Image (tube, rainbow over all chains, first blue to last red; front, side, top):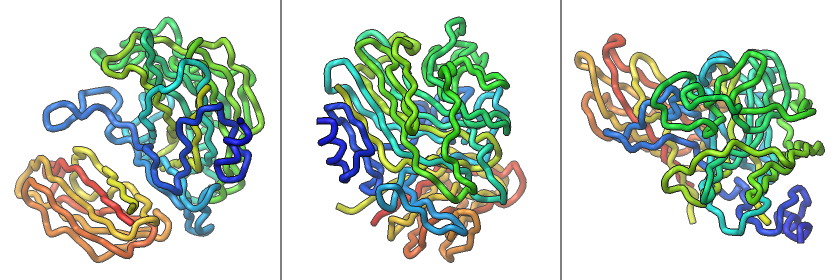
Length: 310
Length: 112
């Protein structure tokens, strides 16, 4: 069954879906429900509540032909268009809260339709900075990642991984999973700001204090998680890379992370469990994001994504 | 069905002096409308000028020729554009010093 479903995509075997495919998104068909994450515009004048993280300026998502000034149009792995996440050309130092616009974050809002069990996200992606200067800009990409935001009858939790590529211009190239440090208060989670909306463990993409060696209060390093991805030799040559994240919503555990041909066994690691939020019962939101490490736009191109479950 | 997207390029942004919206890829679309909603205006007789720019690479920009008439009051404004290639943005200016500001939301609406 796995093989039949995988081949139904486009005749290739480049996905390894679980038996029930919830979403099969190829961005030649449009944005498929992926859009930038924004705060709740529920205040007077359709403003968002005050926060130490200004999410209203996260960079836009768009359909991209991956075109470059001296290379021309790359297109995508499947055809012509990919989903591009683009930051603004602004970054704080790593150990500071992310600057407004320094991240781009896309979300697809789903809910559960199968009994609890294995859930999986697979994608083919590429990453590069804007080719606005000569040289190789690999070190200007701070991180990119993929995760699920889940809420069941008892808990909300974020389960996912990011590739910590660079910290203040120093290449790290190491995988981390979303898992908050235990001894962190809600206030510390929000960089010391009182009255922040989010609870400890929620939205670790931008919350959780960060330290100059790459650690944060929101992530744990994956054991043996150093990896040299295929970045290529210039910023206008992009290579499509495979990523798979498998979780278990029955056990509320990580299962596996696959990057390229490397598989990291994460079974038994539990994400940070948080009391449920109002009105999001059964939430199952896959998300992807990218963050710049310099005053320079960086891009995450996503060719295609498959969300599947047991 | 026709392809369609609404991109929100700025949300309640505080504009003063020179500004540009973030580059947006438009290669799949054949028609576009830029909307500006001027939500709050502060300063002394402020004027907001904005014009459409296009680009071959998203880095080097050229005036497309379409421009908003000068905006002086709160309200909603738009311009239409066609035949623009792979990228669009708005470039603009609020006259006067830092005290002259427009709070604005800017949409780019694309259709194929």
